[in-house]
Length: 117
Image (cartoon, rainbow, N blue to C red):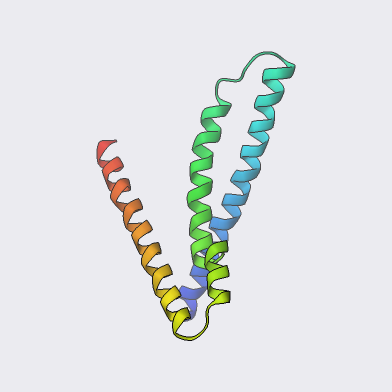
């Protein structure tokens, strides 16, 4: 059972990361399309900006999931590399506390937004 859960965790983390990368590519193509249409064809596209905004939100949320799970946040990596002994334990505790606070804020505002919509 443990190996299945770990396999599922790796699968979902990889899926989130791959989808975030795909969304980044789509956003880049939409941005290029918007520039070409606006400045070359002189007819601004009405749907690309809103699409890019919504895709960017999903890209960031999926990327944060993968980054938190992999531990790929740059500042976190740097602090952990520089710390030793009891200071490392303190840094890990601070990182965990800040991460939980961030997730609590996201959940709080997410619930509020879901109730409004």
